[in-house]
Length: 426
Image (cartoon, rainbow, N blue to C red; front, side, top):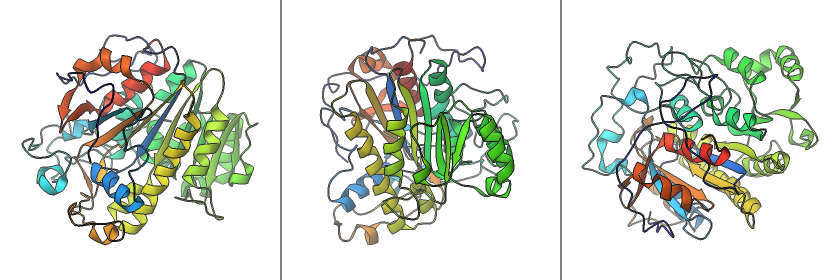
């Protein structure tokens, strides 16, 4: 992947800092100073998370598409690009060979070596999932993006002491903004849950569903899930008592609804009569949330990760292209506006995907892709930003080092970017 940074390219980006922010007195407090809003124009913040989407995924998607993915270009809209560290606290203590590429797992075995962690980690219980590995899981990865705090694997919006951490949905709601969470995963998936609930173990589906009912989201769109299905009357009543309309098909989505939980048989990578696509739901979410006070929306392309775990290359590619369509829907919606910031990133890479860049084509890329692991990796991931963040980058330039020619962020810095543009408190 070759990107050129416009406007920002002259900045000297040095001195990496991994500190985090969060100031609500109702939640665990971070130790960093308050910061001030960098733009008086931005009122809408949209975060896209391609779950499991590493740099090789992005590049391969461009080969398959026949042109770069819409966010993998540099132009007047997508003017800023960076790479991000994805490690959780569970990754602490493991050797990482930084003399080799941190973007290409085929060149650096330490990126995907899943040796069980000797850290359990400072004595805290990580739950029954066994997510004690060198690499982050989606719970810790999602929590870092949602709250700006690194936690151990399996935790959802909670610090290592079991205290809740305020997330971007809660921050936006506190500012009288509308809020939404949209995913192609089910409603208890780790990434969306990181933006909705505060639960110590990602597999506690009952606790997550209970937390969703009292979350600060106005709009939640996801696949349905067995625990909900098996207790449908209980959860329908619970959600309706908390002001949600509960719907099960796209024809029932109404802009006039006060709050919505939409649970579908699936969220597809492209238009399908059986279920809505991520692209269609993104379009609905943007129109539903648009208001004079602004909004925060998180959109996750979850099945990039799931198909990478199982090495289902052709299906993964369809999910990746579906995610790209959803991002393109948002960028078209934002075109001509100066009040919207779009951030595209990933919580981690999955599968150690690679291919021979010198010998592939649109016609052969599916067969050319190879995989190194069935698990996540520590491969660094992309950040792409739509909107003018010149003032923000100038102010924060000393937070970042560089990695293979681009600024090098921590995943918690994505939270910082979003929170600063949501509120003058951040």
